[in-house]
Amino acid sequence: MTDAERLCDLNTPALVLDEARMRRNIARLNARMERLGVTLRPHLKTAKSVEVARQQIPGETGPVTVSTLKEAEVFAAAGVRDILYAVGITPGKLARVQAIRAAGCDLAVVLDSEAQAESVIAASRASGADIPALIEIDSDGCRSGLDPSDPRIITLGRALAGAGLLRGVMTHAGDSYGALGEEALAAFAAQEQAAAVTAAEALRRAGLACPVVSVGSTPTAHAACDLTGVTEVRAGVYVFFDLVMAGIGVCAVEDIALSVLTTVIGHQTHKGWALVDAGWMALSADRGTARQARDQGYGLVCDIEGRPLEDLIVAAANQEHGIVARRPGDTRPLPHLPVGTRLRILPNHACATGAQHDAYAVIPAEPGQGLMDWPRFRGW
Image (tube, rainbow, N blue to C red; front, side, top):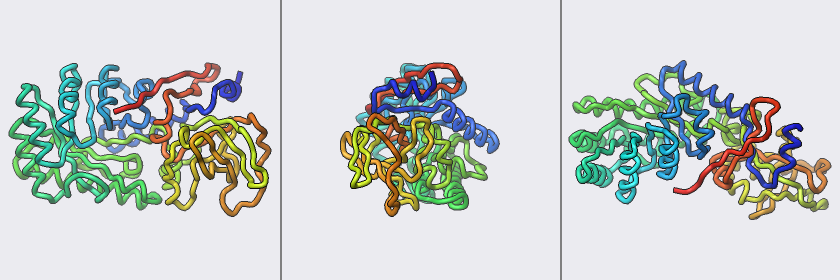
């Protein structure tokens, strides 16, 4: 039985993972980080799967990055021992952080304010168990963090170091997702590196140790040319890639390892539509390509083998219905897609699409094997 025949036996919609493509994506970034001489700290928020994580982490114990404490708990229970929780910490989460650390996992937190630092210091002193922290640096004005020249970096550094909790600095070039092409992406990578290194050097001039200088996003990880002064790089969506990454030139459409299997359920021939059973509950409502030169709607339509069908996209989506149509301006009729036809939809944003599903139907990299079922988890 072929992979396509096996996919036809699945209930739809279903989340499909091409293991061979995923492995190539992982190997590509691993090799790049090795050439640049830095540690890769994969972000596991995209996959939310122990099985995928085991392929991303050669030693299976880390280092990794997470975006929720649920992720930290699941991966720590699976044997990961070096985790960075890369979302600003709040006092109400510190008890969970301490429980994870008490179970043998070196979980570090991120902060950018005196209030956060005070809560981390107080919790560490009250329990007698240290909670290491990194100071978040804003490298592009995108989100949280302190400007690399902000004097509060030294203030926070001194407070954390005085309690034995200062681990280093970290930043995330979130605006790089809006860049286009190799030159623009490289510029973002250089800006990200400079911001983190500047902050680290400021701490060291103040007499404070800064062992970790952490940067990263999938676009900048693939575009960086010089990571002098950086100790580690974080990236997440690289494991699967998606249409947003293809649209800015980080990968090719053929590299995208994730798709949603769907079934044609009807037609509106006079409108040029085919209806499928994957709406925004299966694909997500993410429209990340709408701001790009090539708008992919709610996803790019492929045949059962994963080959894109010329100029077919999910042009609109309701909760459980997707509308397959030609791109705007293309007046050709749809190809023959009878009711019951199986299609695969490549996602705009792999993280958002994955979040709609509880498991991956995995097409194995090794020929001759049956489909594998890899669970994924959700929650905070």
